[in-house]
Image (cartoon, rainbow, N blue to C red; front, side, top):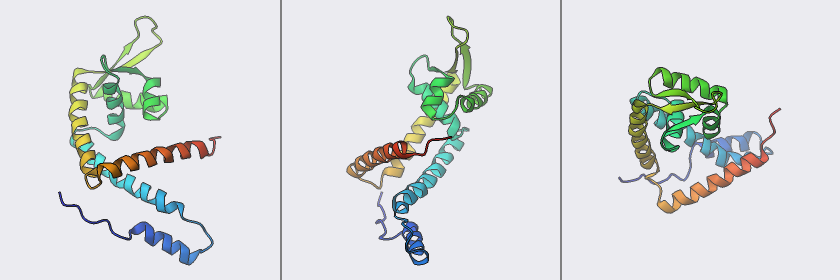
Length: 175
């Protein structure tokens, strides 16, 4: 696939220039990174939605199904484990699992030794669906990144790791 050259300027440059003209003393330099990250994420999210919709699920459902698949046989996790994996509350996981259970993709199962523990477990249909969707999803992600060299992808992955670490270390505590 022939890639278009990366332009010297983009919409973020225009926004930064507008701020500089209208409020020169305001430092908007973080937009150069975070504005581009946000715009890229919105485009990425839209691309994911197309793939997931083609398979009758959404991103939230994919997160749960993928976490269960990654856990290995018997493909089951507690709500707490799923919440940690997906960075959502256990209440959010409950809603997701409810939808997936109604669709026949997961089932709930109590622990044999401690009945208080409830697992969400992939059904055979859930396993079939996540394997089909995951293949399409990762092919889509490879296509998205195909305009970047392997070296650029590795550099970006490392920079994004550092960015997440910086965000976690410098976030305002929730009150």
